[in-house]
Length: 60
Image (cartoon, rainbow, N blue to C red; front, side):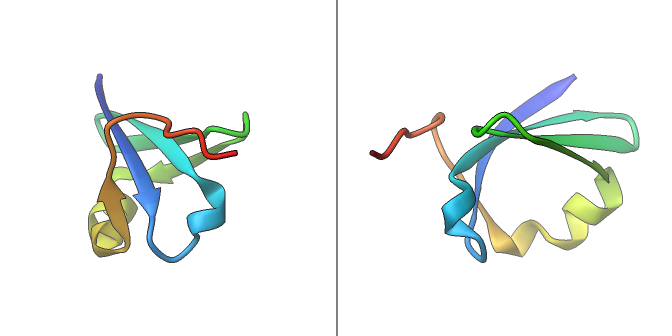
């Protein structure tokens, strides 16, 4: 399983989240505890709207 930390350029209020990719599925695990299931194709199509980050980057 491939994991990557990302941050959305369009939705910075979401903070950093981790993406778990396996096969055709991608889970976006939000730092707030939520999760979204997307296809790997969706992630590929929207990759321009995300930027990689080193970790959760807690800002308070």
